[in-house]
Image 1 (spheres, helix red, strand yellow):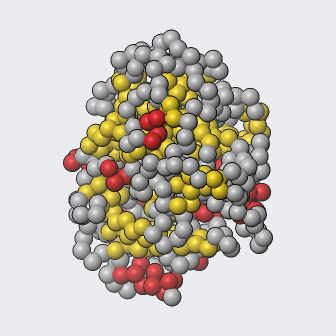
Image 2 (spheres, one colour):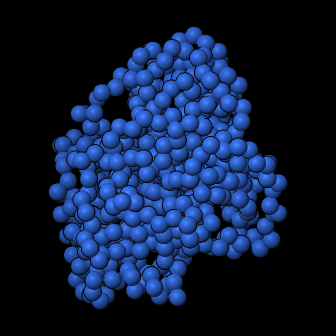
Image 3 (cartoon, helix red, strand yellow):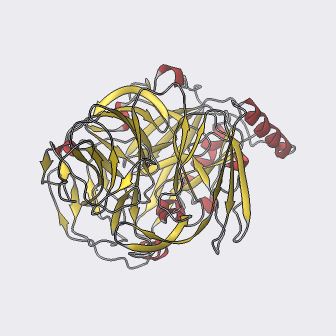
Length: 531
């Protein structure tokens, strides 16, 4: 029944019968080329080379063998300005196909880095991605092959806007959950998640929560100016010894069950308790340190590259002013902490106090954390498990933010709907969109220039961060007013969210849950332009 309804609604989105295939390939190619030509072009070219390969990486003590872009985690920062042409040659030194998906960039369809739009790069071969970058913001890149995203194959990608210079320093903060090389491999974890006889539910221990149920947004990245340090310090911070979430006593690496609960996430906090949680590739005992001066305005770009973990992030002794969600400006909003789902990005501004302060990323509902340090003066660091009081105060979630007027997408067309019904069975570990796994998907259809409403509907027991390639959409608040611009949105259990989409980037685009294991198990569909 669900599949039939989804199929009918997908066709209804176009308001007519199935499109004719005759001549559509040529029309699609011409439309993609025209969209690329219409984007801004600065005349500048940014070149880069990436080498996906097996590497040994130091996480700050543990030495892991994993997949990486070269010999660092995260991979090398790529930076461009609006209108630049990006030319990136990827030399695949893995023994399996790979790709590079440019997450959040409104780019030409055949350069997206995800099948079927872009073929994967065979083992031992090279491929050059070439496209213009039309929008400023905080983005990132990762493969779209198998479970490879739950390795070290990721990097920050920043597109600068010269008019956004009202800050003194920039700190790119990349969050990750880590198992490869120290715990079970992603393939072993997936085998456990899909096993007929899963492990029994771990013992639950309930601790107080001060959070309210809501959805989240995102922030960005890693810092080229940060240095690695294990002797950094902190002062003038307040702490709490009580975990702000409900979590389990499961041992690291446990899988096949919910590992904890979170009010912010509407219940289950995930499937996997990871051995480590990282900021900029380092464990909490060996954090990176970002050096600044008291009084400086620091733009922090947060990026959550995790596969199964939402993070609640706070900087001890500081409030944060949220300025961007998924690359797009919002009305500045002050918070003490942010909930950041997988693949989301947030930009914030903080005014640095005097001392050394831990930036703490609590693995939401998992009773563990990642951390880095901000150093502006003398002090001594707290214990690696320190949790600042800010984590329990004003927690920023997506409903709190509104895009600025210049980036509003306007109102959707009436009676034009794209249904995104999320489904799943935890026992069988099967996940679907509109009643079907990706192998059987009935794509959604749009025509260029349409302005449909996307209806995200989640009747499952878990939250799902849903990402649409090649586009952003604008959330609609409960009263119908415009919200934040996003390319990835957390949809909580039993929640329905509405967003407006402007169909202005022709091609064949995938839409999927950004929990790596849900996506691999089938929670993916396509948005196809028709002519």
